[in-house]
Image (cartoon, each protein chain N blue to C red):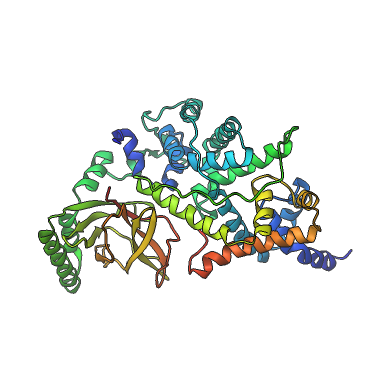
Length: 259
Length: 197
């Protein structure tokens, strides 16, 4: 059989095989053959990945069950540690020691904890010293609004913590008497091209859209959180496609627990 | 619940940072990953094997794979959670197919999943909301497509075995798999959402 015939045959069977492959429903032999043929056809790779992403979602469908505490204990014993073990330090290929403290930045954990705890309007204001005058005026207005809201609020604030692509971001969620909130943060990286930040209020485990925003230059942000926070468990921010999403499509980069 | 300081510092890190630390032998980071994803992994294992002890053994082996192979994780291929669950799934399928006394019965479509109670911990609540989205997508599938997807994904049957089990032409089984997966994708895209990674 010619190579062209071979290719045509594979193309004809591709769609059906790709779905079964994504579900893990090929025999070992079929799977090996499919992978070998796929390696020669990079043009088909994207469709296989799309089907695989849909199949992977099935892993989240089962009803939740709690494993026994023994499982955790046995696992940690197997890897020679306990949850309370000191973080390991090891040499990278370049000989640099890497620790959790380094990942959390210069000054280590104490500094990280301090930053997370103390940060707020003050840190945010300090960051503005590096902004240009126009920007400073614009953000200053928002800061005054936040401060004014805070002054009238009497309902305090909640710490906002960064994670993922915005792990160094931090700030406060300032609450007002009317149940409104302003999200004040520092250190948010610009959203990737074609993306925007979207705020969410979590009610009974369901995220409700609460507005889109872009951080100012330098990562300072003050954005009003839309909707009510009455009875809400948390406020979060995710990166979403331009125009926003009706439901979040990525993990949060900023979160504040209201519990 | 108060979390002690040593454990708390791992909570500040994202999954991708934790996996880097795990690659360097950090047992605390490994515990952090288990705490975030162990329950989902166990729930998947339990759904596939149907027995508590078998599911725990499966999850134990899968997480030891994570410990040994953390360096091979590639973020561009998907999230850490997806990677961990795919290890559980692959091991589960191997086990289902190799077991001499494969306790594999004709699957019924799982009854409507009970509503998950919101957790005090935000990340948990967030994962629950993603789970609810996935369940919403599955509930929108025609039962015959869902049945084929479940037989393949959770019970480890090959397309040929499903065709024999359900007494359907092989082409029909393959078609249902393809349409089912595409409908899941369409469900998310129809709401302007990307399929979660």
